[in-house]
Length: 118
Image (cartoon, rainbow, N blue to C red; front, top):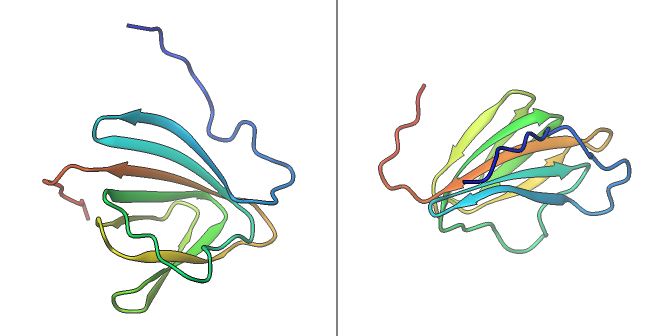
């Protein structure tokens, strides 16, 4: 077993961000964790995210708004807000803070038996 390596989610944040940045932090059989950095970025106009895995997403800095296809519902997440997105819940990012970085932590997983705590 290799030794643990400590890193920091706030390290190496880009000063200039032409494109949204996706950094995979961990991958295992049923889980993938990534850091997403946005600044005024949105999903492409056409198409939706329709993921095979469930996703739990947390906003660490900034803010972003998600739109869900099923009921045309918009959810705005700000610093500290998190949301569970079930597999195949079609969604897209329609707004992120244009004046500052939005830092997301996304956990993608494929476990069937889940319980979201309230």
